[in-house]
Image (cartoon, rainbow, N blue to C red; front, side, top):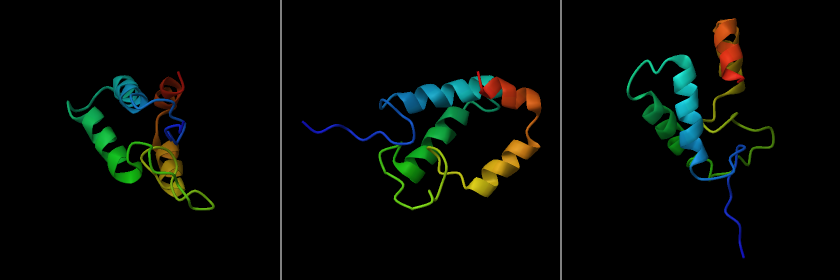
Length: 88
């Protein structure tokens, strides 16, 4: 019996939708397409977590394959209240 690969911390195929919805809810859903945008980016970058990152250092971080330098920039520019809400 082979097990399905779910990478990037996912444990099921529906978890990406759940996470994207929660992130957009916390940040205010600036657009009715915010969840779709996150999922489409994840689909392109990692096939929604089904494509393993084979780079020795990890070419991208997370389901959407954000580059480490971009993640650091976002963290530095985000309001602390938003960072705290995303940790919930």
